[in-house]
Length: 444
Ligand SMILES: *Cc1c(COP(=O)(O)O)cnc(C)c1O
Image 1: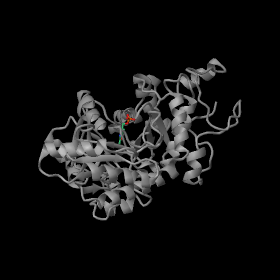
Image 2 (image 1 turned 45 degrees about the vertical axis):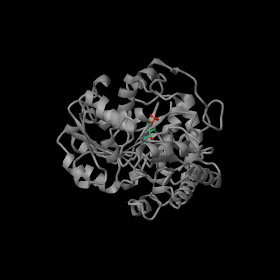
Image 3 (image 1 turned 180 degrees about the vertical axis):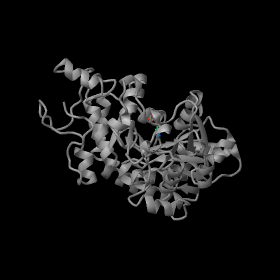
Image 4 (image 1 turned 90 degrees about the horizontal axis):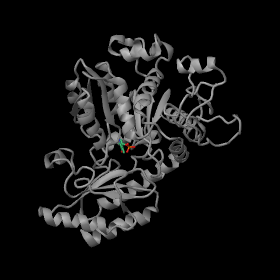
């Protein structure tokens, strides 16, 4: 049985487009299928009891039961790990499961996480509510306040968590600066790279240690399968402070005297721990079918992200010129506060999730009716609370995705009553611009 975490084709020097199409799958087994099959099998047969014992004791890595791993999922893991420049990955059922798994692999009751205030709402709920109730404390900081990150560190801190490009305002993180502060504090930086994807930005190249994805969005790209991935870049040395990381550096009780750090080392210990503990125990397993759909999406990631980014910038520029629009939050625009940072971190484009504010009149009820008329007037851009789809979507953060925030929290997040979010798809750019112009002309 081959070691499923070892790299398969293509070789280490291959370029992005080759890796996104081929990585993780080596044809040559029984049926010689050229593309990764959907392995619809709940369990796996062993050649001998001796082999079964080796796999169950983690002496060799292999498939036992599909809650823990499935061959289609392993192809996805290998491919996303390669695209991010990482050493290994765990694919799970959703982006939420990926964020939860990454944090739980690093922190447990009594520990603490420092996180960006600008995080995706589901991640805020996870940290603020579910993980807090398990005894993992969180401090939220403004992600651009470097002193804030530094000041939030405690002896119990075990991770920093932020997004490379945030939603809905498309702010860009200074990955390197925050990574340096995390490392001074002796903890890894976890980056949610969902909006950027590794085609636009590889946070591991700028000091981040662990990358999480909602593969539901751009990796899959077609809005037809949920999934999440945790990539271990392999840069963080858990062995340097063994007393802080006993889950990796001391015997792993359920496997006798096995020490993950000794057996698997940097870049794999965390992945093996995450899979054999939290995926095994909680069961947020990715189905083979969803893994196959996500893999097929990834095969066009580079050309889709080029098109998404180019069209979104074109739409942002058109909105910026419209008299009914007060402000466009897109880092590709020169007046945007994150423009210089985007030029540094995102030379290939700034993805396609951003927002704009209608000019507010001060009459709240009238403004709300204008927002409604504009959104309901759209024909090409659809009213859907999702991002990263081939279709263009619009949503109203203040009453939809962020509807449970108080007016003060909304203001702190930079979201006003007339803020409208877009996720620009792959339709003809002219059609998208014309649709928005027509809705603004008629409704605002
Ligand atoms: C959607 C999203 C998530 C959650 O992913 P699911 O696949 O819906 O669980 C996490 N982070 C970001 C940035 C997202 O957009």
